[in-house]
Amino acid sequence: MTANEIKFIKKLHQKKYRKEEGKYFVEGKKLVDEALENCPHLIEFIYTSDSNFEASSEVNIQSISPKEMSRITALKTPSPFLAVIKMNSTEPKKKSKTLFLENIKDPGNFGTIIRSVDWFGMDAVYYSPECVDIYNPKVIQATMGSFFRVPLIEKASSELRAVGSQIIGATLQGNDLGEFVVPENFCLVIGSESHGISEDLISQLDQQVKIPGYGKAESLNASVAAGILLFAFSQS
Amino acid sequence: MTANEIKFIKKLHQKKYRKEEGKYFVEGKKLVDEALENCPHLIEFIYTSDSNFEASSEVNIQSISPKEMSRITALKTPSPFLAVIKMNSTEPKKKSKTLFLENIKDPGNFGTIIRSVDWFGMDAVYYSPECVDIYNPKVIQATMGSFFRVPLIEKASSELRAVGSQIIGATLQGNDLGEFVVPENFCLVIGSESHGISEDLISQLDQQVKIPGYGKAESLNASVAAGILLFAFSQS
Image (cartoon, rainbow over all chains, first blue to last red; front, side, top):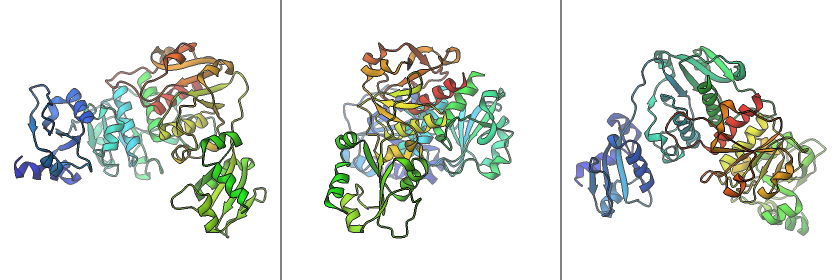
C-alpha cells in the first residue's frame, strides 16, 4: 500500500471525513461478502491479507500484508478483509415512502429499522444528525445485509418539508392506527427511544398516529413501533 | 443478615435454585422501584444499604451493611438495593392469548417481546428451556417494567398442545397476514433468530402465518415480527 492509501483509510475512521469523502469501510469476511452480494458497484476497494480470496473480476481487490492491515484496521483483532465502499445516499424521488429517524441512539434499534424498511420495500431512510453513527458496526450488523441496499440520508428536521410527502409522526397522542387513512406517499417520523418526537418536529407534522395498546406498558420499543407502522402502511 | 439468608440469596445466583425456589432477585434502584410499582405483592424482601430508603409499609425492608451487600450481589460494583421477588409464573386460563418463544437467544429480543406482549394485553409468555436466561439483567431491562407484569412460564414444546389454544407459527411459508383469519384464542409461536421454528415444532402447528414483504430483506428481526403479529392479532 502507498502511504497515501493508508492515510486515506485512516481518515475514514473519522465521521467528519467519511461525510466529506462520501465513503466508509467495513471489516470482516461476513460484511465484505454481504457488500459484494448487495452493492458490488459501490465497492471501491477490497483490501485482503488472505491470498486465497477471490471475487468477481469487476471488483478491485488488493493483496496486502497483515502488517499493513494492522495499520488501517479499526478492530482490536484485525480481520483479513476490509472494504472501502461509497455511501448509498441517493435521494429518492419526491413523493415517495420514507422514514425519518430523529435522535435514535441505540445501534440495534437503528439497524433493525433499516432491516424492516428493506423488508417492506420503502424508498429510503432519513436520519437526524443526533442519531447514532450509522457506520457503527452494531448498526451494520443489525441490518443483516439491508445496510447495503437501503439509501440512508442525513437530514436536519427543518429540511423535512422539502421531501414533498405527508409527514406523519408516531406519537402516543395520535389517531388510532386501526382507523388511520394512510396517504399514498408519506414520511413516517420515529422519535427518540426516551423522549419521542421533539417539540420542534411535532409542530411540523401533518398527522399523528398511535398504535393502540390494551395493557399496562407505557410504550413500545422504537424498532417494534416502526415495524408495526411500516406493516400497516404497506397494507393500505 | 444471618448466614442462612446470605446463603439463600447466593443460591439464587444459580438458575437451578431460582427454579427450585420460584424466586429471583434484581439489583439497582431503577429495577427495585419498578418492582415496587408493578408487583409489590411479589416482593419478599428488599435489602438496602441506603439508610434513607423508604417504601410502603407492606413491603419487608431490611437494612444491611455495604459489606453484607458485597456478599450477596451479582454485580461487580454493588448497588445499595437488592430485592428478592417471587416468580410470576401463573398459568393463564385455558384458551387464552399467549406467545411461545422457542430458542430466543438475544436478551434484547426476549425483553422487547415481553414489552410488546404487555402493550397488547396478551395473557402470558411461554418459553422453551433453550431460551436465554430470563433473569439476565439485559432481558429485564429491555422489558421496561413489563417483566414484573407479564406471566412467564417455561414449557417444553412437546407440552404446548395442552395450552388448549390454536397453535400458530410465524414462518416464511405461512399464509399472508393480510388475509389471515385470526382465531379468538391462540398461542403464537416465534422461532429462533437464526433458524426459525424447529422441525419438531413445525409439525405441531395448526396454522402458519407470514408477514408479507415487498423488498429484498430475507427476514425481519424476531421481536419486530412478534410485534407486528401481536398488533394484527389484537385488531381482529
